[in-house]
Length: 111
Length: 119
Image (tube, rainbow over all chains, first blue to last red):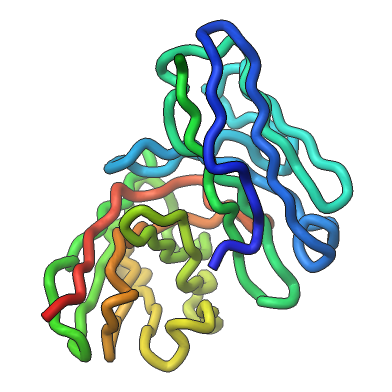
């Protein structure tokens, strides 16, 4: 059962900017645990996209950016490209559950 | 290059058992915590279990406590998940994931292995 809430889907035309929200609570994001984002194409290994709220691993385009405030976080994709069509998940740690928690997932569609 | 290759998935009847394996390469396996994460059909990602570097500490999501056991063999660079008393709701793709040192995140994942629980 997902503890972090994301919109089921977002869409945009090529070149546009889209954002994905991730809403948590005082036992996870609000408890100062970092938020991380993964890109997942069905049938493939999930890929780390953003770590520590705002950091991009080597090789991830700077079109992807992350932010965090209070009990929420956001992922922004600017200059949307066809290859960005995928499912995106936020992830944090929850002190009440003593475990990792994921968002509900957001499907990004490039129109 | 970090590689994580899962195996052991398949079709099993409710109440049955299965053992998943994850062969790791490209990094010093014994220096990193490891986890299993699953994705049920049409659902999102769900953390299942984690294990520390030595295997001395293990952690589980409530829904699998008492039924699943995570373990590792550092001499074989392999992670395991023993799944007993399987239920239909355990049907999912199971991913092996490497924990990023000092943080609660997974920096590398395997491609997954499918576990189907059905009569």
